[in-house]
Image (cartoon, rainbow, N blue to C red; front, side, top):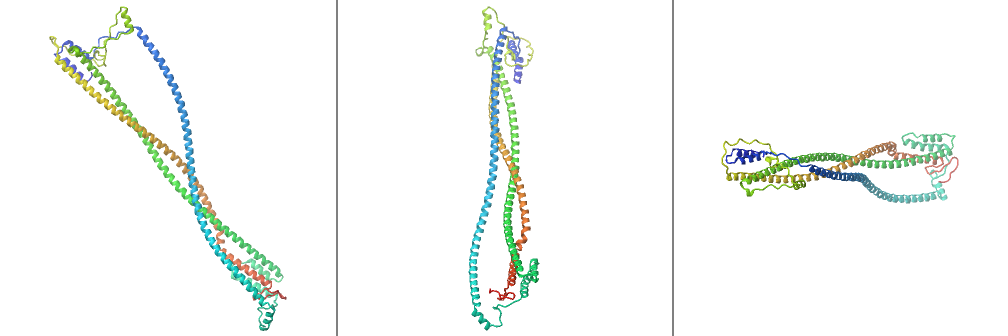
Amino acid sequence: MQTTAADTLKKLVLNSEKLQDVDREDLTSFLAGESTNQYAPQSGQITGILKQMMDTMSATLAEITATEEASLATFDQLVKAKTEEIDALTAAIEDKTQRIGDLGVQIVGMKDDLSDVEESLVEDKKFLAELQKSCATKEKEWAEICKTRSEELLALADTIKILNDDDALELFKKTLPGASSFLQVEVSTDSMRQQALSLLQSFKGSKKGDRQRLDFIMLAVRGKKVGFDKIIKMIDDMVALLKTEQVDDDSKKEYCEMSLDKADDKKKVLERSVSKLEKAIDEAKETIATLTDEIKALAAGIVALDKSVAEATEQRKEENSDYTTLMASDGTAKEILAFAKNRLNKFYNPKLYKAPPKRELSEEDRITLNMGGTLAPTAAPGGIAGTGIGFAQRVAPGPPPETAKAYSKKSEESGGVIAMIDTLIKELDTEMTEAETNEKLNQEDYEEMMADSAAKRAADSKSLAQREGAKADTEKALVDAESEKTSTVKELMATVEYIGQLHGECDWLVKYFDVRKEARKGEIDALGKAKAVLSGADFSLVQTRSHTFLRRA
């Protein structure tokens, strides 16, 4: 009734000369919401009934509150139990995830070890095949050498037997009187010393370097107070020492080669391990950076989603509030227009008039009437123009007409007003229908948007939790890999240092092993010849001994 249409209707009513004064007064009173009657209080029984109703409702409220508190306590216990169960399951998941990661690392390490062992096996098989081939060749060569040596020994034995025959010796004396190659002659001790010194000096002169032990033996040979037996024993000791040194060199060379091979193999394995760990560390860092960006993006998306949901909810509340206000206002306006139309029909169209419902008597009212009493007058309905519908600010009626005319019903004019009221009611119905449709569509869109947002938030939260778990596992793997790399690098450095020590200890020996071996072999040969000379042998096939004849060789 506070719209421009109501104001227009008031002006039409006040300015129209076709309306009766009574009708104009009633209509303006209706439009102004005027009320003349006051509320008459009823008896105290109503207060008692209301008090009883309040007590009943208070008891019911207390019972419902107690039930709700008990349900809330049960719910809290259930939430606590489920939370503990979730924590336990989460811890189990994390433990098993860690075990999976550790087993994966072990599997990768075992695969790497298997690859290394397979490569080593292939190399060992190749070396075994070459060794078998070489051994077969050496066995053939050794058999040939043994066969040739046996034939040579047999030839020498036959030759010695032939040359040492008595008849042959007699024949040589007759045919070769000046030759002494096959004769046993007498030689002096000095000649034997000189021959031995010559052999030792020739060996010493062919080798660069000082040989104190040979010098000592040569000094002993030159000395005349030392017998040949002691010198021969010194030569034997010298030969034994040289053989022992050669055995030591052989063992040392074998040890050096084996140690260097093992150290080089270990170095290669460690270098491969360091390379793999560096690659794993780089991949882990890249994965962590990627997961960090993804986690940041997901968290920002969830915050933005929550903000958009809150904004949509606030907007939906405002739209619903506007819809509720509009529907209440339009409903009230329809009721007022219907009431006004019914009032006009009471005067102009009595057949279309709808009387208000009869008053329902309470038990107290009925008792009062039965006792012969009278009821208190019914209070006039409040609200707009005493209709009991809403309230509006009263507008003072306009001035009365200048003269009163004879009473007559204005049926045609009333029909136009009623038609106008019907048009307004239809417009209100249309507006309410549109508002209901829009409200329904907006509510459906809001519910769909909330469902999609809830699903997206749940998916993003799950993805966020998964990425956070993956990031934690990757960070742990990164720490383990860096720790393992540190220890592996230390071991590699120690291995490189050990290889350096081996090279410092073994390079000289390996480089000059053949030279040293050949030198010892020549020295032993010279010592053997010197010993033979000192023992009476003559390398021109003459066997001599000081002032005596030696046995035949």
